[in-house]
Image (cartoon, rainbow, N blue to C red):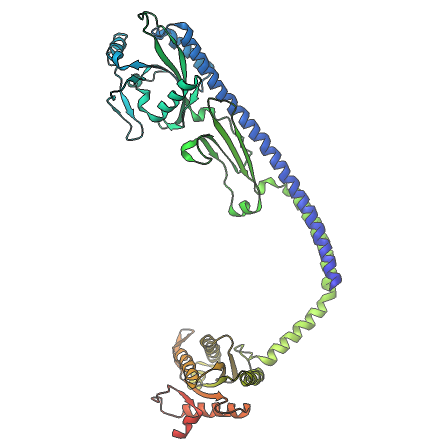
Length: 517
């Protein structure tokens, strides 16, 4: 056997080494492909967000040097040219700072400039999304320019940016820091996810304004998050990536600008294959976004043609090895199987699988020896089916055999695993109950068995009812001799079979009660 194990061990080691090397090479190739794809994805997204920053710088510079804030046509022309070159930018806006004491004059000027219904209003973004009146405060930050201007969106002009918390925070940060700052992701009224960028404009004096009437402006871009999403390669199964704001932890929905997942993996693939991970912050300072890419590798990562070839070769070697081993061992296995079968038939009943008389006697002998050493009792129960002959005569021996099998199963399920159930002959069974402390314990066990057996048996559509007679003998109380103990239990059983069924023991009789019959 040592030689056989050595041969199989050598084959297994060789096959495992070649297979593992092939799989490791496939996984390395998949990892390199993933890293190459993730770096390319990062470069495209980073280029787009840096373009956003450059566009905002240009708009800010234009507003700062043109001195034409009141010339909406010139601003619109410039912004339209910008959007032609950069179509992914959704909207360009200008926000003006207005002091409370200047508010009436500011509104009147806007209405006179072609916006007769212009009004500064607040917007409830977090609670119902509805327009509401402005609060009394020192400063207001209304939108005074917007390009493009979709039909029906003129109401947005005059929106006080300070009334929306996340817009106020980003705008305040840009004013303090003097450069562009992006908001957290938010959902537009139309339903798309977006973010906004603010940058302060150097204070300028507008055309036609009075001396000293300087205005503080903010340029703003609104960018739909899907516009910075590059084209995705279809050949990357199991890919999952997200672009999220650095103020939020990864996989936090409210911080995600983009979330994409393709072809989720099965639980088995998740267990067997590694997950590749790529996380990198974008270079654009104004947009502190982090790209997180993950790929759960699976079966497609493996080169099955190569693995199939390896499997074929190793199986061919195994086939030759098995042929040699099987030819040598076949006769030995047959001999062992025959011996096991004969040994089982010698100790077990062929019909029910219970212990036969030989095994029963051997187990009873050992059980009595253990009880003697441990100073304990054991009970011997003899069982006989009272109506079994009627079943054979009425339904035939086939049904009778099925009944005996079911009786054996019920008896076995009524006792402990350590107890022994045997079939001596015909409808006669015997049970050895070890570690019985009292006579009442044996009587209780017999009652359990009796209650199970008197329940109807359904066999091939026929409902069969039988009675059982149980005789009990206790070692060493009734006898310390094995033959005498068996005889006592047997006689008790026959005494029960001939007595009145109304007897209080319900068909159980100890040897000492025979004197009362």
